[in-house]
Image (cartoon, rainbow over all chains, first blue to last red; front, top):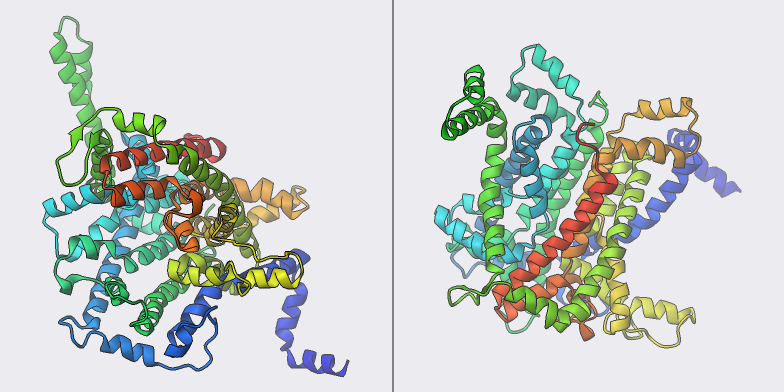
Length: 299
Length: 324
């Protein structure tokens, strides 16, 4: 009793009053989500802990999720792993940043533009275009690898950043999601802006983009993830080691070696480094999704 | 415009000229929409080059015998005939597996994604970001990190977390081989895939739900909506129809494209008695192990048809009319 009183005195009153105002549904939802989250979050907890495990803990079976005796030797090993090769690990990182930055910008911009035209302009063939985009949504990427390779070689973009970026831009998912959001924008809004003398580009930048920011942020997350983790372009279209990206380097860390024990530490550290930007971008963009609903004044 | 119409309507003019008139009219309409074409151009150029052309090439390849060394040899419908009549593994394992899997995981994952997105959307904004992160984590983490969680959990010996737990509760008397026997592998895969299914469809639906104007709920309350369930049915779902459709199509696509999970979980390829053999695994098998690329692409074309039909069904269920 005493303890309970002490505890409730300890909790800031502001939070308590907020909890009091929650409806039963919200409370049930909260408890349910906390329980599910704990289980869903396991990979994050694991990845963070794994990177700081010393060698004797890396191979324990069944694996420990939490690290017992943290050390940074894995990171040192990762940095040292390129000492004997021509290309330093920082070069791979730099390539990855350039490629990912370009990809995210181009994917979001291009798919928003395309979706806007398909949704709001009744140009001849807009149904055919959208139908084709939808149809190819499901094609298994591996089977088109060879024709894709021929296209890239014909375009002469081997060993350039374009060779990394352009194949990634052509992802139909972005256009699809964006179109679904733009469909909800009332046509009257655009018409009234047109009456005020706005040109198409102004309409797009001033009205469409702000209203579909949640969709743009969502596509941004997906685009970042696919570009950042992509190894396919590095393997197929880049012959120069200097043009390859960080995920490719991570893949080479353990493959090609006879035993899978060597460099497991470096791999664990690299996995964390690969994962962190994903996490940061996700959090940054996701708050955009949550914040914008207050601004998008129309519906 | 008027000039070309006159030409079309004028009597006694040869067919060729009339056609020319129609062509001019078409070109004029196309020209009047030039801004629209400029808008779609950047994406469409990339799309045609890197997706459409390769896909068309793949469709053409599906009618050939091609082993990536010799030039493709045209064989007509042979690949498809072989698929229907002689490919026993496809008919006995890959096709039924893919269908059962897709029928459970597609709708199941979709419902889970919607419920979780809805639960998150009714909470105060401070918590939303963190819960979204938690739900999206499995999609964010790589396959390797994922298997680390599930492999020891499903391990077939007594040490495996799940077996250990169930043995302690006396629910089972012997350790269950969750991923190494053909009876349980499918179940395990379904569980793992559902766990991993909060992907882009989930994010899209959440963004849609958060975009619903709160005034609509207030108006609904005035109109006599009492329970949360009624609110979902009469306000939330109609207001987020486009995102619901997106989620549905993504669920279908995701369910069919799953291939590695069975192999990763069981640690074997092919999986025990083909229990987790999917059409995609079958394709990989023909393409990269046997190098029969012609037949492999024929399989993908077949898969594409299946998914296209499933997609059509989704549009029927959730699609809006064109003039709405």
